[in-house]
Image 1 (spheres, helix red, strand yellow):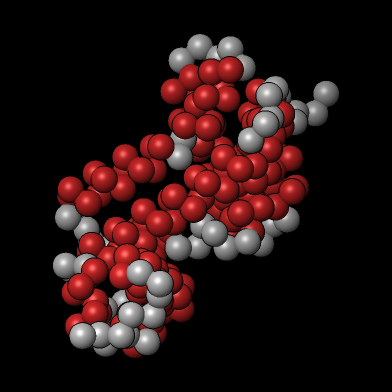
Image 2 (tube, helix red, strand yellow):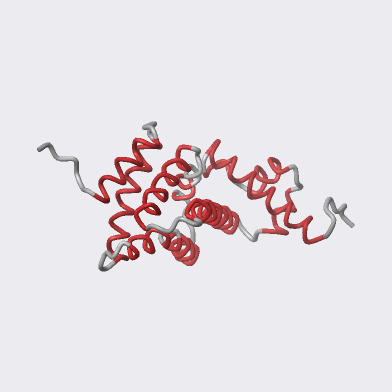
Length: 193
């Protein structure tokens, strides 16, 4: 019987699964999708290769689990930032600032290698559903601002925010980008008078 390194079997299994997820994240960031396979993940997590199959049926299942974990972490952090903020305009500003700051902190970096994965259509559908849930705070805020068709305008606003994310990923200062994104969404282009 294998040695349990936690107070309960459930905690032991959870810790090992988390170790596999963190090892995969590290490998994705270091060497991209090509560096991820059951052997390399288990080596990085200091687990035997057979341990992989105790938690995941395939590399695709592992990648989806990493993506889900990343989505859930992002969602928790955004919700924590927005907690207690009542005014919709303040929520919009905080949402944009948090998004740009989290991007600068590297919390969006995992998305690029995961986008390259050739996942089964059902996995892609599941991930798109999760991605859509990340739009909820933006949709809710836009609806609270009184904008008609908030889903449509949330999609447009997300496009501006995605452009801001790319600018931050290319080295621009996150607060300056957040200010520009907020201005674009609330005032429009800063045209000369």
